[in-house]
Length: 313
Image (tube, rainbow, N blue to C red; front, side, top):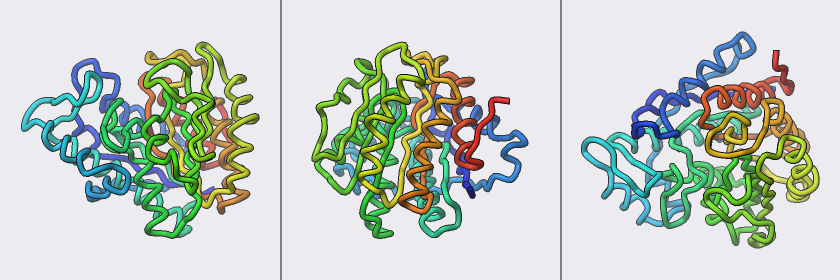
């Protein structure tokens, strides 16, 4: 497999409050995890800033306007109790979207089979009308809609294995049959929702997981619910909301995934991408707040994308 890794040099300009879990050190942990010999020949580029006006592909104008009003000249402004914006956050947000656009172009044009973007702030909680849950704009949703409008891809699949349900992505595409959305997540934690009965226009497939369950439970959910539905959808491209907070070490949830569980789900998505869409996958970072767990998960995810294999050694 040919893979692309997109890093974000200006990601730390989105300055976190003290002790906030969504912090710039997450990017350092990922860079370190991907510096080993396994990744010596990994194609690497740096994220470029995109026009924040692209947010209007999936958000109302009020989302950007509200952020502009809250953004401080110095220090940190709060959108809600958990979601913040600093003076230079727009630069980081622009390069998070830009990374996704670069990844999409490289994959669609056949320069690489797949790409992973290590960017922040994350995006999958941002809804049509509001930013929330650490997220300013819904990066993966913007990329999905751009793929349709710029490249003419008709059937976009988004698979979200973050431990928290991607309420924003579901909100944006809830009645849109051209976009498949599937989420595995711990039930009854933030942001709520993500229930089995939330089916949208037949394009939404939630798989809530019981607290303290492990990779075996996750694999059953994918094998029985998500993967058959994804195959039936036969996507033109697969986008991944890659959160690594289902790792057993993560402080914000209570699932017990190991590194090989992230490798397994990545491999299964690659199998379907190989069958239906010329191996085309774009993966974008969402959560993952224990730095060791995040590094282990990203290492496994990237190893699968690049080599279609993973070893903990």
